[in-house]
Amino acid sequence: MTRTAFTNVEGFRNLISANTAKFLGLASARTDLISQLDAIVDSQDKMQAAFLSWANLNRQANADPTAPVPPQRATYLQAKAAVLAKFDELAPTAGEAVAQLAKKLDQTEKDIVELQKLIDSKTSE
Image (cartoon, rainbow, N blue to C red; front, side, top):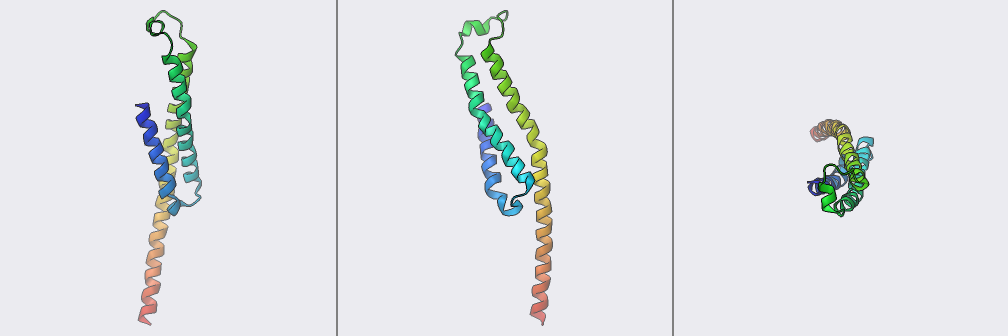
């Protein structure tokens, strides 16, 4: 599941980076969104390394419910919690980017209407 989530985030990051620049330019919400997506993508290696470190422990030790929590497991769970927190922080930033994009779209529509009026007035003269 995490591999799919990271793949989706990478795809979303590429989509946002490539397609919204035309509309939002250097808008702060777009920049913040890309920064947060980059942080999630960059955390992938750390989380994978933490998981592999934990998974490489003796399976019997991991299966024993009375055994103390190995530090590798705790490290993995902390890395996982940090990534999940980054996902939670993503929603408001994505919402702000959508709001800025909607404002830009509204302004573009107004500009088109004004341009059409100007063209019509020049044509009728």
